[in-house]
Length: 431
Image 1 (cartoon, rainbow, N blue to C red):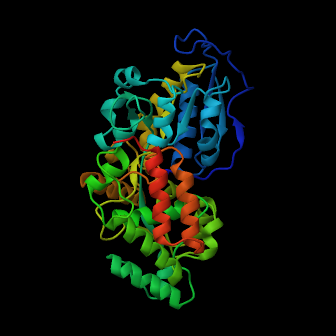
Image 2: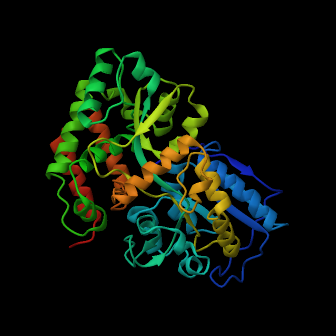
Image 3: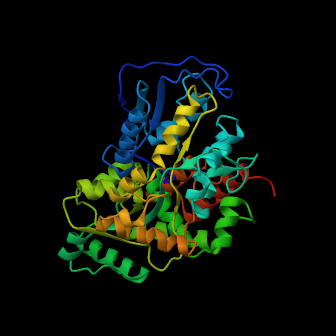
């Protein structure tokens, strides 16, 4: 989020008792901790796999901490993305919160000194042993806020990756087989257009659109290309073959009617709902939708990995972070530990999430097994390529606004790539 990426109305729910606010003070020493309140923020939908798992984790936490009140606030993804630096630098910071991973988000906050170093806790509680190397990449950041090495500033609470969701009923209605190759995917989209059906659910106002475009680039890229772009291990040229192909193909898809021009102002939530309502036959997006589609979609649907590409968007999921100004850090560490337990991780897996520390034999739901098997396939071939907005601060907004121009036709691929290059070069470390 995704990058990336999400979807929840900002409502506040008090899960236990009245709100008790601890006093602010020197939180590093723990001297200000009153041990009476855990203030928790996350942005998972209540019926999503993560939402259900974290709700169960709260119950477990309360059972193990009698007398402790849990103050939970559901926040929108964009709400946290835009306000985190300001809120975390105040006395209103939560004790533990879900936050987007990557250089431009968690990395930036760690560099600004707004997050607690979790290295000692990660070692003591064994979190470092529970996470695979590829998932652990987004947990650690160096002094410049670049992921992959340094201190622990977050703990991935699940894993995630992107895939093609497709409406089997609509495919059957128009006698279209499940695509096994990229050529078959485009042929399927052509047939939908011929039948006056816009094939791709798209949301240009948030992350959906530029993730389509990044996947197109990844289909022509390799690991060294990703490392150059995401980790600054080489020069990134937005006019190279991969980026040029992606921008040209995306613009062409708009012209062909695969993507609606009216989708430039559509948000991610609306995009997912259009698929749930059976209006769009295809959605390329992340595993964070999986549990919700299981719960809400009333038609037969399936998934497959983007065809003819070794790479796709994905990583360890969003992070549990503990703000520097958190008032009850020990309670925060205990809550994180519960979410990493076999009980909660197994529940997450059976509800349609991608757990990072589950018992494989405990996952009994067939759809969930497929979801996790596909993730394992990607992990084994080193196919997780992170997200396009990660490299530099503010790049998410640039990608959204510039990709909207490709959808509306107010800019052409060459100008689009020029704009991305300028923003990237401005924010990336000088080489």
